Image 1 (cartoon, rainbow, N blue to C red):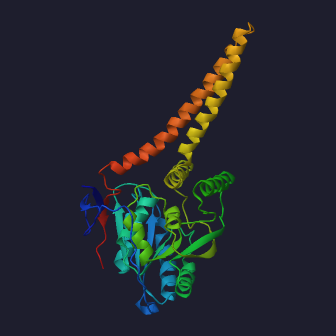
Image 2 (cartoon, helix red, strand yellow):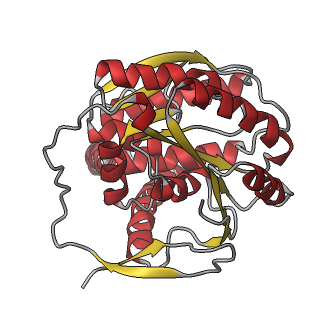
Image 3 (cartoon, rainbow, N blue to C red):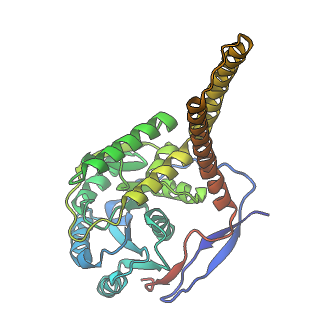
Length: 350
């Protein structure tokens, strides 16, 4: 019997608990062929999921802009905030806002599990006909929400994807790293994510399908592209942060890039095989040459050559073992019985 852990929270102090569910034997996801009657604007419920990490100082101003934008859509709405284990007063600020704003719900994770898993926690609690995912630092402009909702209603697409036309203020190394990552991912997986962001609107069908996959190594923008639902794009410019500084260090970005590449392509494993074949051919040629020189009496000592070859081969072996270890690590994480995240507390349901 396969068992999975599903995070669950109830009440204000839901501490460290989860439930077990049986996994179906089928490994594929069946999407029921249904047609959704287009709801009227007043009957449409929009859920907005926002992961937060040390964003308390700018939360009030951000939520004010967000409420104004959602009211302009003419739809009912709910806001789900996920505090990803912030070490500051972010959770206290969230609770104050929740008391004054009945459509706001929030959960607090027991520690910093990372933005992708915090996003999962929010999506699992979203009840809307459409779900919007955005950052809480203000770089995803709330003013774009009415445009995204209208684009979804008029186009009939499953996903409205906000695409960056400008990345905003970013270091040269950051821009270069992002460029190389998207080029490599495109070549290895076939998904063009240039300008991609986590700022998206997805309908209920996409949200339910995404949740049914139960991924452990989450790469949200890549997974939504992989599902293959119809998509329309809305351009936007990344604006400056309202305050503070980004929690995305170079190490965190490199880790996410590694997850994205290993999750969507097995080519690095094949690269190890190709490198082994090339070195085998090289070794055979070098062996024939060495034997010929020995038999003709022209052999000479090649200490430097031997050392150089050992260093090259040793480095290749270590890199190869590292690549294989990355994939084995992903498989190991899939077999563990831990929940992907733990909810420490939550605000009361409205």
